[in-house]
Figure 1 (cartoon, rainbow, N blue to C red):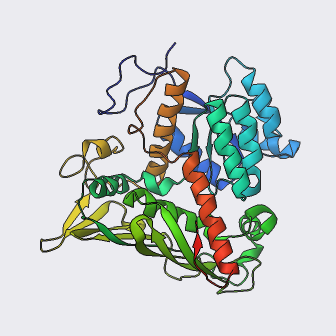
Figure 2: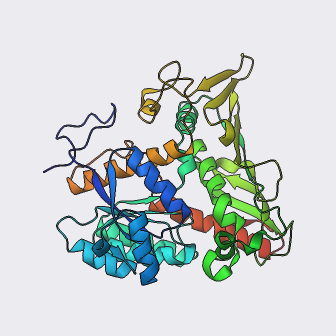
Length: 394
């Protein structure tokens, strides 16, 4: 039975599904629980299987916590990919929420089994592995989403539309920062969920850049429609000694030689979700703050500023409204942004299974190419830092 209706209005509200899609979980940490919550929020997914630990005892305990049948809680992603691909009721897709160094192998296992993938960022730790995932996605025809969830806030989608419609004129500069404070304590590196983020064998050659810097880099390119072409960067350890950076600064160049800045740190006391984007152009500017995510400032030079708020109507486009669940004045937040990502991922997964050809403009969710671009960004920051902050091509 088809999952989506036969005739879809690709410019209207998102269509309903004939059934919930079956989702598997790879990695059972905190972020997997957040994503599962968001997936369930959409009413388009049900979690039915998982590879939650390589330790049999822990996997069994996790199965109970996730309310999964024991026979569908696996101790390896290769075992799970093979078993689920052979089931009539096997998973339609998986979320990969493991530490970075496992992303490539896990994703390849499911792509080769014909199972769609939504993978955490950074996509991989190596450019060659990111390239391999792009190739495998093209070869298998699977849907591959990447969890750049900051691009899934409704007002970020509105900002992207405003830029595309010429609402700020010709862009002349882009500034983005991600300021957090959770690494301020001197003993933070001893926390279990922090250790792998500071371990080069698992986190790769960066920590702050790969974790939150990539969010900022993707967001700037997503809203501006301009690819990042060159940068020069500096890595710093501003707090207690660590094997990887906790802070980095970068000067950037986008297409059309548009200049910009990017800063990210986890040692900015008083900042928790301090992601801020500012885009200025020949006719106006846009400003958005994660901690005030309901609002988007749109300034036109010589005119009163406009503050757009998330909600139905009143300046929010029909395209953005598809991602809105509550009325103006009743706030949404990060879980809903994750829900928007899982809504678009569900529609892409269902369309592939129904063999429906959809317009490239229908869904704006980040895909494997965006993930690979993020890995190339990370690689460029490392190369520049190693050269003393020299300009390098992304």
